[in-house]
Length: 184
Image 1 (cartoon, rainbow, N blue to C red):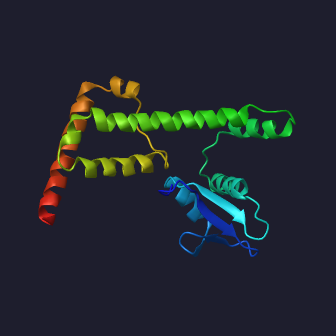
Image 2 (cartoon, rainbow, N blue to C red):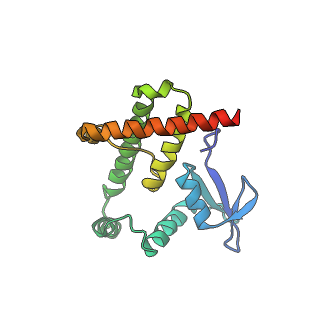
């Protein structure tokens, strides 16, 4: 999100073109999906009526990704979602999903916080650059979800893997320090 905390405003014109009010250019659904992956919130409104179209477009983005074979939602979940819409009764599914994703985001944020505060390497020169690189890697590996391994998964790792990881981190740190010294 922006520093002001406001979502990125996208206006839909009568021609169905989407206009980014922040950069004053037209955007596609893929662009909007990229904003969201980068952590931005978006709000899409119809310019003429003022209707909020955000939900409609987010569902369209999900449908397009699913149709391209980028399946994220298991069939059972999709069936449950359809059932929750078709029963006519108040469903707990939306609240459950919202709370589940909130817990996931909180857990991932805590893991990333622990990595930075509990890691003795965090005081070494170049650690910030290495951490940024690690976050980009994690984002790529998790499809845009910020996070990492859970503490219990970390505890189950054999000590040899930990030593190898430490050696790899030391190598990366040395490479970063070498690059930094060349920049000076």
